[in-house]
Length: 262
Image (tube, rainbow, N blue to C red; front, side):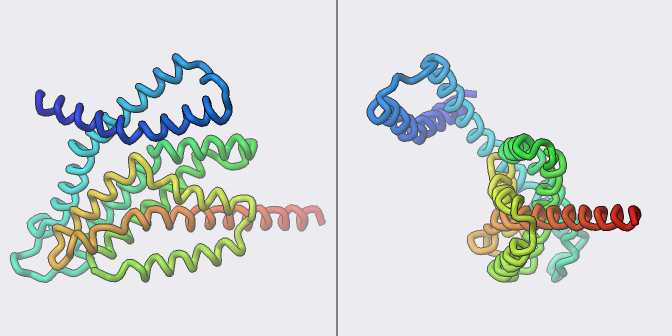
């Protein structure tokens, strides 16, 4: 318990140090540039204390729980004993199918719970007067992340270069952008960014590093990173694809209505 408290106080100090420049910047602009008193000062101070404590507790949680869990799961699921391989046997990429399934499921579940995505989905629903469904957007983005992590773990297992997947993915994004409904392009690009936030990143990073450490012939420094890039890219493809599908469905429905009227 004493060790935990010492770790927490150390993390709290570093968090306060990191937040301090932001605080100084805000106070400077408010008092010097705008020359206005800070509104609701007591609430602002209380909120700032909550933010610092929350960040410190979150960072402790990452170190003590999320990072170890992601690494342990990757190690256990890629263990030759679990896979059923004999010692010294060369494994094929399909031998790690449990890793792909776990990566897809963890990508879907963490994205659904991602606070940043929830916030964007709520605002998108508000400004579109309900045309863009909160649930629909979150599920679409989560499916994109699920596919991304499954493909990303496949890349780690096979050892293929990261740039091939990223280049191919962005070529698809550019082509989709040309044909997708213009009003949803910006939302699709933002959806790719908000997925890589507080909940998703720690588990994804730990999963990549743990897997690259467990798979023979992989170097964590080279192969362990890159999953977050997948998690940022494929939600854009998913949302643009969803927008194109809905636009096509609307056009077909309109054509059908016109034909029925005739």
